[in-house]
Image 1: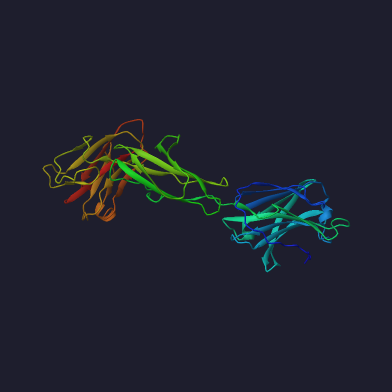
Image 2 (image 1 turned 135 degrees about the vertical axis):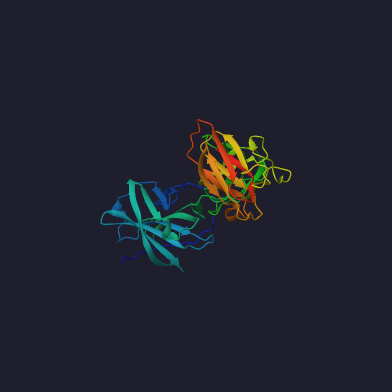
Length: 389
């Protein structure tokens, strides 16, 4: 094990949102720091340290006390938890990550170090080496010893006091009002609320969130709501029967990290009482006032078998049933353009859940289609609406 005498110092936390730290020429040694930067790519943490003057790789050899270091605090207090030492061996730059415990160093693992020009080092540290924090605070450190002004070691830091925040984690987004993919949200009215929660865990704070909308099948997004604060958000959307709306949330923190949520679809059905749906008899029981609250058809109506027809254009069609009632053993038979495509059993699938119980995709959207729903068995059959896209 190579032994180093490392001069570790405590420093207060600075909550600066900084990618590049500038430092004045304030130390006489050859490793006087001019600037330092931070950045990240995935779970790789990238730092550079540049000096005012040039120096050879051998200046940082293992037989000298000369080195660079990154001093890292991962838990928002004054104490160091990690230090990355950068030195040279056999004519190449190396980096080692150590855990700090009461100023004692315990080896954790290696990092990558390089010298892209005569006065700069570049260090790439796997995030796991420092405990994979959402954000951390750090400062650059150099020390140089030579006869003359630096005979007792010249130590420089950037910044000279405090540490800077490196937020490495994009904000979190939870789509609270949407079901998991691939299910669409089926609202109970043409007006509905979409809600979501946005938070920032990396320390830089949430800078901006945007709720974006587009009609299904289109490419361009429109921002319909935005803000700067974290927490639970809600947006009231006014649609129409037959609409298929898509939403996503974009969130940016104070360090520029961006997260884009998955796209969620909201399908507003064509209501069972819409005149575009034709019924081969009369409704046995009318639904309550308002959209998508459920209406029943029955095989004991004056036409047997009872059937509902709907003409549409699209590549996908689905049947929605209402919630809250047990439908027994009723069975619906579905045909498209005169061809039987399947059956659905709402008593087994939809009891207690308002949802799509049957769907068919892969249709030619350039030609009109006819959907027919037939009550295949005796009993009641629920129909809440039709979704097309």
